[in-house]
Length: 201
Ligand code: ZN
Image (cartoon, rainbow, N blue to C red; front, side, top):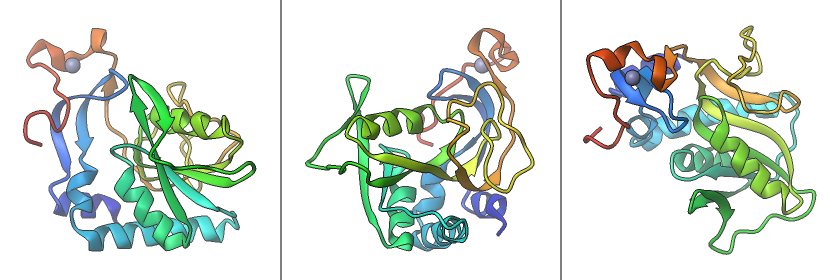
């Protein structure tokens, strides 16, 4: 599957100067919302991701995504796996399980994002569920920004990766872009980083 082409065809592979939720700056951004606005894309991508997970023999009872970015991918993945879907959300900066969602002790949960960069939000979501006794069996994403190691890729995890190496990360492709800490970003010389979505895209 050519994930890059799907993103390009949906005008979802952006070039510029972007501020990531981690605080770092980058020269490219994957706008998954633009890909997933077409439900057929969501279905195709998540069916392929579900196949990887099934092929690995992983048992999953539930998919959980951190709001907002991961919800569409996670929901469609849950459909493809035939399991239920819940999401966590930040309240005053802290990831919480709300809206009557519950996880049971020992329930096998896969945490799904649209894109895994350092995995910070996915990890927060996982910790929130573990506090209720859930068993986090894996992480998933449509694409991996190349900082974390995904199943089937020869790329090793970089120091920025926050996901535990003991749990597999399933993703369809690696996308390697430049990422800079804000104090050492060469793009800041000529422009100001902006958060995708804040200026109409
Ligand atoms: Zn910058």
